Image (tube, rainbow, N blue to C red):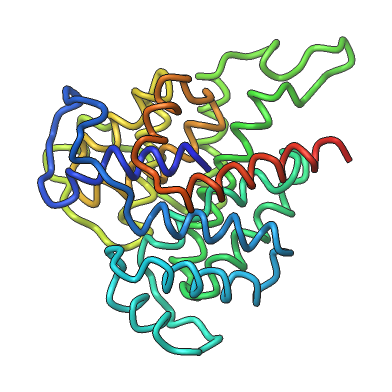
Length: 284
Protein backbone atom coordinates (compact mmCIF):
# COMPACT_ATOMS: atom_id res chain seq x y z
CA UNK A 1 0.00 0.00 0.00
CA UNK A 2 2.80 2.43 0.85
CA UNK A 3 4.24 1.86 -2.62
CA UNK A 4 1.13 3.43 -4.15
CA UNK A 5 1.11 6.33 -1.70
CA UNK A 6 4.74 7.14 -2.48
CA UNK A 7 4.02 7.08 -6.20
CA UNK A 8 1.14 9.48 -5.63
CA UNK A 9 3.31 11.88 -3.64
CA UNK A 10 6.23 11.86 -6.07
CA UNK A 11 3.91 12.29 -9.07
CA UNK A 12 1.71 14.95 -7.47
CA UNK A 13 3.61 17.95 -8.84
CA UNK A 14 3.73 16.57 -12.38
CA UNK A 15 0.05 15.82 -12.99
CA UNK A 16 -0.58 19.23 -14.56
CA UNK A 17 3.05 19.88 -15.48
CA UNK A 18 4.02 16.71 -17.28
CA UNK A 19 7.62 15.80 -17.87
CA UNK A 20 8.90 13.33 -20.43
CA UNK A 21 12.10 12.29 -18.73
CA UNK A 22 13.22 10.00 -15.90
CA UNK A 23 15.74 12.58 -14.72
CA UNK A 24 14.06 14.53 -11.93
CA UNK A 25 14.44 14.91 -8.14
CA UNK A 26 12.60 11.97 -6.63
CA UNK A 27 11.11 14.05 -3.81
CA UNK A 28 10.69 17.81 -3.89
CA UNK A 29 9.53 20.02 -1.03
CA UNK A 30 6.44 20.92 -3.08
CA UNK A 31 5.21 17.30 -3.31
CA UNK A 32 1.99 16.41 -1.50
CA UNK A 33 -0.42 13.51 -1.07
CA UNK A 34 -3.61 13.61 -3.13
CA UNK A 35 -6.96 11.85 -3.28
CA UNK A 36 -5.09 8.78 -4.53
CA UNK A 37 -3.46 8.33 -1.11
CA UNK A 38 -6.61 9.21 0.84
CA UNK A 39 -8.67 6.61 -1.02
CA UNK A 40 -5.87 4.01 -0.86
CA UNK A 41 -6.14 4.35 2.91
CA UNK A 42 -9.93 4.13 2.65
CA UNK A 43 -9.69 0.77 0.87
CA UNK A 44 -7.26 -0.56 3.48
CA UNK A 45 -9.59 0.63 6.23
CA UNK A 46 -12.53 -1.14 4.58
CA UNK A 47 -10.54 -4.37 4.38
CA UNK A 48 -9.67 -4.19 8.07
CA UNK A 49 -13.36 -3.76 8.88
CA UNK A 50 -14.48 -6.83 6.95
CA UNK A 51 -14.07 -6.09 3.25
CA UNK A 52 -17.76 -6.30 2.37
CA UNK A 53 -19.41 -4.19 -0.31
CA UNK A 54 -20.93 -1.99 2.39
CA UNK A 55 -17.54 -1.62 4.08
CA UNK A 56 -16.04 -0.22 0.87
CA UNK A 57 -18.95 2.13 0.26
CA UNK A 58 -18.90 3.44 3.83
CA UNK A 59 -15.13 3.78 4.04
CA UNK A 60 -14.65 5.54 0.70
CA UNK A 61 -17.36 8.03 1.57
CA UNK A 62 -16.11 8.61 5.13
CA UNK A 63 -12.50 9.18 4.10
CA UNK A 64 -13.48 11.49 1.26
CA UNK A 65 -15.60 13.56 3.62
CA UNK A 66 -12.68 13.68 6.04
CA UNK A 67 -10.53 15.14 3.23
CA UNK A 68 -13.08 17.09 1.16
CA UNK A 69 -10.47 19.34 -0.47
CA UNK A 70 -8.52 16.51 -2.10
CA UNK A 71 -8.57 16.60 -5.90
CA UNK A 72 -11.35 14.10 -6.57
CA UNK A 73 -12.98 13.62 -9.93
CA UNK A 74 -16.33 15.33 -10.39
CA UNK A 75 -18.29 12.09 -10.47
CA UNK A 76 -16.76 10.82 -7.25
CA UNK A 77 -17.18 14.20 -5.57
CA UNK A 78 -20.89 14.16 -6.37
CA UNK A 79 -21.19 10.54 -5.18
CA UNK A 80 -19.61 11.03 -1.75
CA UNK A 81 -21.79 14.09 -1.19
CA UNK A 82 -24.86 11.85 -1.36
CA UNK A 83 -25.94 8.80 0.63
CA UNK A 84 -26.22 6.57 -2.43
CA UNK A 85 -25.13 2.96 -2.02
CA UNK A 86 -24.94 2.41 -5.76
CA UNK A 87 -21.94 3.09 -7.96
CA UNK A 88 -22.10 5.61 -10.77
CA UNK A 89 -20.61 3.41 -13.52
CA UNK A 90 -17.34 5.31 -13.68
CA UNK A 91 -14.76 4.06 -16.18
CA UNK A 92 -12.10 6.26 -14.58
CA UNK A 93 -8.75 5.23 -13.15
CA UNK A 94 -9.76 5.86 -9.54
CA UNK A 95 -10.59 2.21 -8.92
CA UNK A 96 -7.04 1.14 -9.83
CA UNK A 97 -5.18 3.96 -8.07
CA UNK A 98 -6.68 3.03 -4.68
CA UNK A 99 -6.74 -0.77 -4.88
CA UNK A 100 -3.23 -1.84 -3.81
CA UNK A 101 -4.19 -3.03 -0.32
CA UNK A 102 -6.38 -5.72 -1.90
CA UNK A 103 -3.19 -7.35 -3.17
CA UNK A 104 -2.04 -7.93 0.42
CA UNK A 105 -5.25 -9.11 2.10
CA UNK A 106 -4.45 -12.77 1.42
CA UNK A 107 -1.53 -15.06 0.72
CA UNK A 108 -0.41 -14.83 -2.92
CA UNK A 109 -1.45 -18.43 -3.54
CA UNK A 110 -5.01 -17.46 -2.56
CA UNK A 111 -5.40 -15.05 -5.47
CA UNK A 112 -9.16 -15.28 -5.79
CA UNK A 113 -9.63 -13.74 -2.34
CA UNK A 114 -7.63 -10.68 -3.33
CA UNK A 115 -9.25 -10.43 -6.75
CA UNK A 116 -12.73 -10.58 -5.25
CA UNK A 117 -11.79 -7.85 -2.77
CA UNK A 118 -10.56 -5.73 -5.68
CA UNK A 119 -13.82 -6.25 -7.54
CA UNK A 120 -15.89 -5.17 -4.54
CA UNK A 121 -13.66 -2.15 -3.92
CA UNK A 122 -14.19 -1.02 -7.51
CA UNK A 123 -17.92 -1.68 -7.66
CA UNK A 124 -18.64 0.77 -4.84
CA UNK A 125 -18.21 3.53 -7.42
CA UNK A 126 -16.64 2.18 -10.62
CA UNK A 127 -19.22 -0.50 -11.43
CA UNK A 128 -18.32 -0.59 -15.12
CA UNK A 129 -16.35 -3.20 -17.07
CA UNK A 130 -13.36 -0.89 -17.44
CA UNK A 131 -13.37 0.29 -13.84
CA UNK A 132 -13.56 -3.21 -12.43
CA UNK A 133 -11.01 -4.61 -14.88
CA UNK A 134 -8.45 -1.96 -13.92
CA UNK A 135 -8.72 -2.64 -10.21
CA UNK A 136 -8.66 -6.43 -10.57
CA UNK A 137 -5.77 -6.44 -13.07
CA UNK A 138 -3.67 -4.20 -10.82
CA UNK A 139 -4.34 -6.48 -7.87
CA UNK A 140 -3.50 -9.54 -9.95
CA UNK A 141 -0.11 -8.02 -10.80
CA UNK A 142 0.57 -7.38 -7.11
CA UNK A 143 -0.36 -10.92 -6.14
CA UNK A 144 1.76 -12.43 -8.90
CA UNK A 145 4.72 -10.29 -7.86
CA UNK A 146 4.30 -11.41 -4.25
CA UNK A 147 4.08 -15.03 -5.37
CA UNK A 148 7.57 -14.64 -6.78
CA UNK A 149 9.21 -12.35 -4.23
CA UNK A 150 7.90 -14.20 -1.17
CA UNK A 151 9.21 -17.56 -2.33
CA UNK A 152 6.10 -19.44 -3.40
CA UNK A 153 5.92 -22.05 -6.16
CA UNK A 154 8.20 -24.57 -4.40
CA UNK A 155 8.92 -27.65 -6.54
CA UNK A 156 9.75 -31.21 -5.53
CA UNK A 157 13.40 -30.32 -4.97
CA UNK A 158 12.44 -27.61 -2.48
CA UNK A 159 13.31 -24.69 -4.75
CA UNK A 160 10.93 -21.76 -4.90
CA UNK A 161 9.96 -20.05 -8.12
CA UNK A 162 12.55 -17.30 -7.62
CA UNK A 163 15.25 -19.95 -7.14
CA UNK A 164 14.42 -21.38 -10.56
CA UNK A 165 13.80 -18.35 -12.79
CA UNK A 166 14.76 -14.68 -12.87
CA UNK A 167 12.41 -11.83 -12.11
CA UNK A 168 12.57 -10.77 -15.75
CA UNK A 169 11.39 -14.23 -16.77
CA UNK A 170 8.54 -14.02 -14.27
CA UNK A 171 7.63 -10.55 -15.58
CA UNK A 172 7.17 -12.15 -19.01
CA UNK A 173 4.71 -14.58 -17.40
CA UNK A 174 2.87 -11.73 -15.70
CA UNK A 175 2.65 -9.84 -18.98
CA UNK A 176 1.28 -12.86 -20.85
CA UNK A 177 -1.27 -13.51 -18.11
CA UNK A 178 -2.51 -9.90 -18.01
CA UNK A 179 -2.83 -9.73 -21.80
CA UNK A 180 -4.76 -13.00 -21.93
CA UNK A 181 -6.95 -12.49 -18.87
CA UNK A 182 -7.75 -8.78 -19.15
CA UNK A 183 -7.24 -8.12 -22.89
CA UNK A 184 -4.83 -5.28 -22.21
CA UNK A 185 -2.41 -4.25 -24.93
CA UNK A 186 1.08 -4.30 -23.40
CA UNK A 187 2.93 -4.58 -26.69
CA UNK A 188 4.44 -1.09 -26.83
CA UNK A 189 7.60 -0.17 -24.95
CA UNK A 190 7.92 2.95 -22.82
CA UNK A 191 10.01 4.60 -25.54
CA UNK A 192 7.20 3.94 -28.01
CA UNK A 193 4.46 5.13 -25.65
CA UNK A 194 6.14 8.27 -24.28
CA UNK A 195 6.23 10.63 -27.30
CA UNK A 196 2.49 10.62 -27.96
CA UNK A 197 1.06 9.70 -24.54
CA UNK A 198 -1.33 12.27 -23.09
CA UNK A 199 -3.64 12.67 -20.12
CA UNK A 200 -6.02 9.72 -19.69
CA UNK A 201 -8.62 9.47 -16.95
CA UNK A 202 -9.88 6.04 -17.99
CA UNK A 203 -8.70 2.84 -16.36
CA UNK A 204 -7.76 1.27 -19.69
CA UNK A 205 -5.75 4.31 -20.73
CA UNK A 206 -3.88 4.46 -17.42
CA UNK A 207 -3.43 0.90 -16.20
CA UNK A 208 -1.83 -0.39 -19.40
CA UNK A 209 1.12 2.05 -19.40
CA UNK A 210 1.40 1.79 -15.61
CA UNK A 211 1.92 -1.97 -15.91
CA UNK A 212 4.47 -1.47 -18.70
CA UNK A 213 6.27 1.00 -16.42
CA UNK A 214 6.68 -1.80 -13.90
CA UNK A 215 7.59 -4.44 -16.46
CA UNK A 216 10.48 -2.33 -17.79
CA UNK A 217 11.77 -1.30 -14.36
CA UNK A 218 14.88 -2.43 -12.53
CA UNK A 219 13.86 -1.50 -8.98
CA UNK A 220 11.16 0.39 -7.07
CA UNK A 221 12.53 3.87 -7.71
CA UNK A 222 13.06 3.13 -11.40
CA UNK A 223 9.45 1.97 -11.73
CA UNK A 224 8.15 5.27 -10.35
CA UNK A 225 10.45 7.23 -12.64
CA UNK A 226 9.20 5.21 -15.62
CA UNK A 227 5.57 6.00 -14.85
CA UNK A 228 6.09 9.72 -14.32
CA UNK A 229 8.24 10.03 -17.43
CA UNK A 230 5.27 9.11 -19.62
CA UNK A 231 3.32 12.22 -18.67
CA UNK A 232 -0.44 11.99 -18.38
CA UNK A 233 -2.12 11.56 -14.98
CA UNK A 234 1.27 11.36 -13.30
CA UNK A 235 0.30 10.83 -9.66
CA UNK A 236 -2.21 8.11 -10.51
CA UNK A 237 0.12 6.41 -12.98
CA UNK A 238 2.85 6.33 -10.36
CA UNK A 239 0.44 5.14 -7.66
CA UNK A 240 -0.63 2.14 -9.75
CA UNK A 241 2.93 1.34 -10.78
CA UNK A 242 4.21 1.87 -7.25
CA UNK A 243 1.71 -0.54 -5.77
CA UNK A 244 2.90 -3.26 -8.12
CA UNK A 245 6.61 -2.44 -7.77
CA UNK A 246 6.43 -2.61 -3.98
CA UNK A 247 5.31 -6.23 -4.23
CA UNK A 248 8.17 -7.13 -6.56
CA UNK A 249 11.08 -5.19 -5.07
CA UNK A 250 10.11 -3.83 -1.69
CA UNK A 251 10.76 -0.15 -0.94
CA UNK A 252 14.17 1.27 0.02
CA UNK A 253 14.29 2.48 3.61
CA UNK A 254 15.24 6.05 2.74
CA UNK A 255 12.21 6.38 0.48
CA UNK A 256 9.89 5.11 3.22
CA UNK A 257 11.34 7.54 5.74
CA UNK A 258 11.10 10.48 3.37
CA UNK A 259 7.48 9.71 2.47
CA UNK A 260 6.43 10.01 6.10
CA UNK A 261 7.43 13.68 6.00
CA UNK A 262 4.60 14.30 3.53
CA UNK A 263 1.81 12.41 5.32
CA UNK A 264 -0.36 13.85 8.07
CA UNK A 265 -0.92 12.03 11.36
CA UNK A 266 -4.21 10.46 10.25
CA UNK A 267 -2.71 8.80 7.17
CA UNK A 268 0.39 7.69 9.06
CA UNK A 269 -1.78 6.19 11.79
CA UNK A 270 -3.86 4.27 9.25
CA UNK A 271 -0.73 2.94 7.53
CA UNK A 272 0.75 1.72 10.83
CA UNK A 273 -2.59 0.15 11.75
CA UNK A 274 -2.61 -1.64 8.37
CA UNK A 275 0.91 -2.97 8.92
CA UNK A 276 -0.07 -4.35 12.31
CA UNK A 277 -3.21 -5.87 10.81
CA UNK A 278 -1.11 -7.74 8.21
CA UNK A 279 1.39 -8.90 10.81
CA UNK A 280 -1.41 -10.23 13.02
CA UNK A 281 -2.90 -12.09 10.03
CA UNK A 282 0.43 -13.81 9.38
CA UNK A 283 0.64 -15.03 12.96
CA UNK A 284 -2.78 -16.68 12.83
